[in-house]
Length: 437
Image (cartoon, rainbow, N blue to C red; front, side):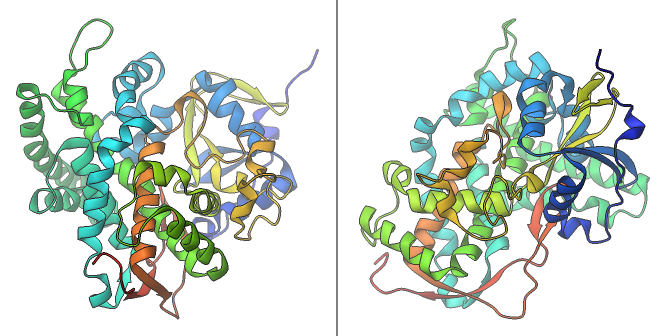
């Protein structure tokens, strides 16, 4: 009878000092040397790394009941409450069913006019400014979109206040002088969030709407119970934070990659010309047909996934690749490393969107090889929302402006809870004629 090897026999590796900016390449090299499972100490805690499509399938699909999202994500997002990201088991499944109708691709027609308007309004002065940080500007756009489309918060002072509070919460670990100061500041900031969101919740109860918050307020669980204010508060916070982080990062990296590859950029522009008039804002049907742009977005997702490692805890012991891993172990399935495996993705560090087009379709040859939005039944609920928003943003921007990278920058992804360009991405911006007259 097969006897799995003990946890202590799993190869141990030291993380390099530049781990946060070399996460994907380092873990891909380690996978090549040690295979799909190894262990280390990350941020003072023992952790098991699982890398590659076999590992992704194991964590995301075939053995997903073994792994806990709450144990994995709670320390990262606990300040925003217990939302969809941190729920496990039937509780998650029930709450997700309540939200699913608002995230289908057909429902994106409801959000696209909001997206197009906010993108247009937020970017109208870019040419007059001359230089913009596309990462920071994308954050403003995606937060405005998430706030209005998902919760009905109005762009302007209301959303600016909300975004400022969220940014302060995300930076608390840097500014707080000790644990007591952290908790004091957090309580104050969460109080401000309640002041902003609770009137919206009460308003939705009296006047139902068809945004996500409106649906959640009207939703009932299997026992016929409505969600509490606390649950609605947590869901709204997590949707806003997660809903804008991924879109912010991916849209900035996609613009960067296209400016660095003018031949492919021209193909994207040719596709835009074929599908849209110069002055037209993209429709959902046109966005669905933008396959050249979609392949570039998939390549940005592969090279710069918004989350480098998917964190999990474990409910019980499990066996993987001949090793036994005990319950209550912290596990990272590595998204960034899986995207750089050369046996799956040819020349994996190169920008090559055609790898996703027929007949190559490298990501389809091995299931769970491209997992920037997760996979399985718990694939990111906002995948459609993010991809429509990013394509709409890039479609507008490329037809409206010409971009050039400001020289002398260090352009590299930094991974903490999520990924971001370490010092933003600054670009020269100039207008094109005969667009948006």
